[in-house]
Length: 260
Image (cartoon, rainbow, N blue to C red):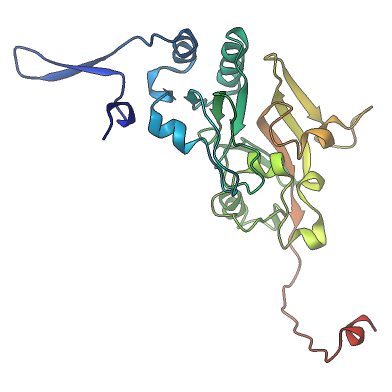
């Protein structure tokens, strides 16, 4: 294994007189990397070649790009810090979730800072009366479904990658799924989004209840594939479960018969 591929890349090991091995991380020489480490700590920033190769691709057939430092923030403030560090050093940034997307939205170009939101995976609040849940972008779609299983509500978008894809990725791609034939795609189920913009400003697009005044910036953000900012909290609308579910099979000899 190449040294840069090791998970402890950047760590110097020493053996003391007692024979106990202890380690001290080297200070990164790259100023951008130093600033990112200052924001997140050394355990949540990596520039190892293995990580950069991994985060240079997603689930699409698009040829991999070139990822820069890979960051794993856990709070909105840490996302702001990553964005500001990238901005100070003139580097682009690319938000990324689970990487299951098929459109290449998280494939990076020219060594951007990769802001991976999978550690932001908390279901913050579920309001059953108002049928709204606030979640972080790294919450896996199926985990939200399981969390709601004991209630009479569900989050309608259910892509084929439901077991792995995140709510943040659903928002970025305006994902669909079988239920969306009846209930509509993700944009119909997102009430509001907390977003870190490219200058580090934090804004909330949309409203939990009712319609926001003016331009529908929430609607513009959903489906933007991360080009408009980084989603850090999402208010999703929950759908009432049907009273009964049944499967119906109809057989037609001709297509025209089905139309009549």
